[in-house]
Image (cartoon, rainbow, N blue to C red; front, side, top):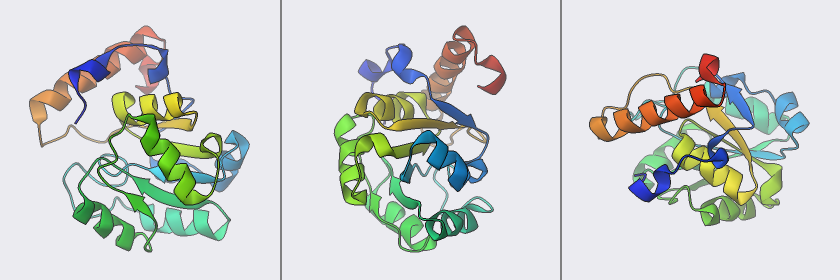
Length: 178
């Protein structure tokens, strides 16, 4: 969970790229970004918050990336059993559960697991305060995925976070894609 100290509004919350869905990111896009691999978040990126199934098209998307030489792994703050399930659903891709995002060490560890420099790794996730801040501070390529619906678990906490994210992106001129 994001802690109050992580809610500081600063430019490290600004993604380098915005996509509506993780499946909209093509291998060509990733190569143009300078990415050799992509780390993906779970909740509101490839599945609904707390769910145990994938969004439509995610499995085929991962398969396509891998067939075109782009490695994929899961980098998530969720618990190990859930991360392992999604890893299995996606073809037994590597994963790091309980990652502690936004700590930059999580991103550096993920890049090391992929055998690349962190600057060659894209991070696709929905949360500015964990996925984007952590990716930017670690030197990874930060990709914001538009979340699909409000979180159910810890509803009040996430409602507050989403409002802060929206206000921040509006203030920075990204309101139309927030």
